[in-house]
Length: 74
Image 1 (cartoon, rainbow, N blue to C red):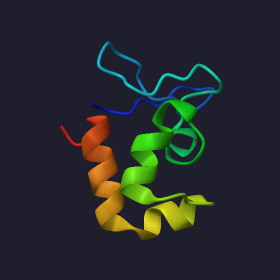
Image 2: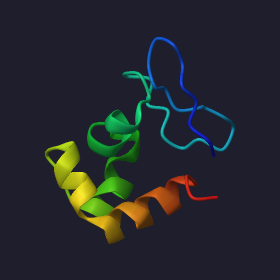
Image 3: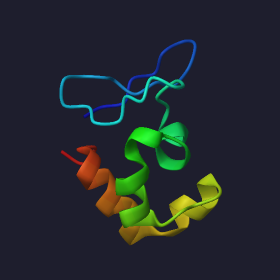
Image 4: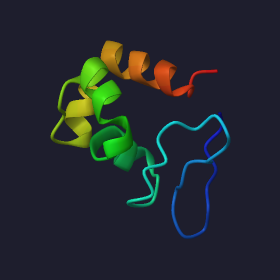
């Protein structure tokens, strides 16, 4: 899945295979990695409970596992 750069924000493309459309906020990578309630259980399983983007990015193994589960590595 490729990320698109929209002029107003860096939203993720929401297709039929997207699992994280909580519709609570813009579906940005930061939102999905830290805040999205629709992905809370999967995020916790792979990353724990990161409090910040640097903390989430510090766990490379967990991050790759999470991205794989989201379909971002296809």
